[in-house]
Length: 179
Image (cartoon, rainbow, N blue to C red):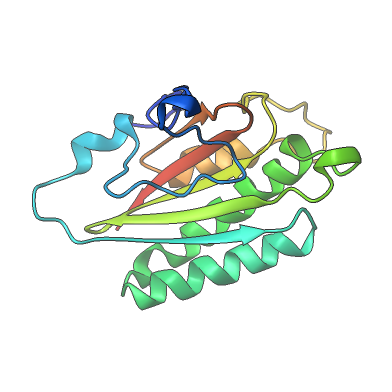
């Protein structure tokens, strides 16, 4: 099952005055047991679970930092089979977040992205949050256009991928890789 499937499991639009939470890209951490809805058919009862989250500043060096974090996390989980694919997926999603999700001027100059890796058995979801509101678009670049293939790479390496908006701002873009 390949393809972008927007899903809204992460969105909470409840009222803070009632003692409930609102998530934004600045404070979202994967809730315990979170898994993208379109990939729930991959789960079996009793699968080992773990998660790791890393805040990334809005700088080009964050792509390398994100790859290193993913490599270290997968090695610690003994999931080296996913390493090459995950490094490419992380690179593409962090690069897209930097290019399309971050505003590096004004009040958002200090905002961060978050990279979360969520393990369920031999499956790992990579989720990147950023403060941008525009949806990721899988597009066909022109033959002489540099770039534009990032989401095609993500789609080809993942079981499925998608995105969801965060309230009151931002989004999470995720991809599931399976060993």
